[in-house]
Image (tube, rainbow, N blue to C red):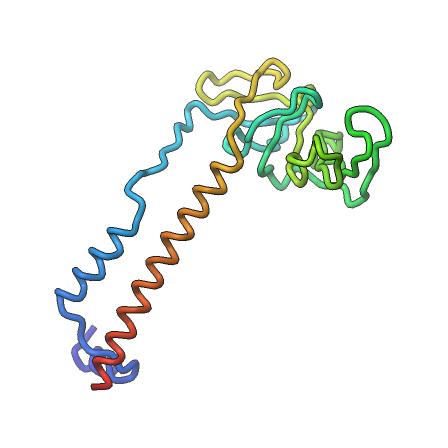
Length: 196
């Protein structure tokens, strides 16, 4: 960028040249806010959830937060676009889902039922509301590390706390908010400095 272009842009936006001390100060402050702990995912130990009938990919182990043994279902925070949510709300009056309303999940490949999403539930199922519950007996898991396919009913899915994911997200958003606040303060200082 030429000096004439730079100066016309600076006068247009009413900003002065930024010296190296301002740049390093901004970088230092932003570096202090950023989280130093890197979240590394070992993708080799992940698995892909597939429809047992047609092998359509329905999700992966990164979206799994546990299982409900009483319902023989895998709890997922997210699934692929190939999981279709039935628009009709169903209600169960008997069994383990008694007094619950839910939507059935279908595989986009074979149109078979693969699970459900609970909406209104009794208190003992309230933690499962609005989560994807994939039926273990209808799912295969392709294990990336070994390259083998295993029935989901043969696997014990560890509980990953949803609260932990929410707390991580909250911390990340708070760090971003702090960065924005620092930048706002610096912009305010620069604008008052240019006015004087």
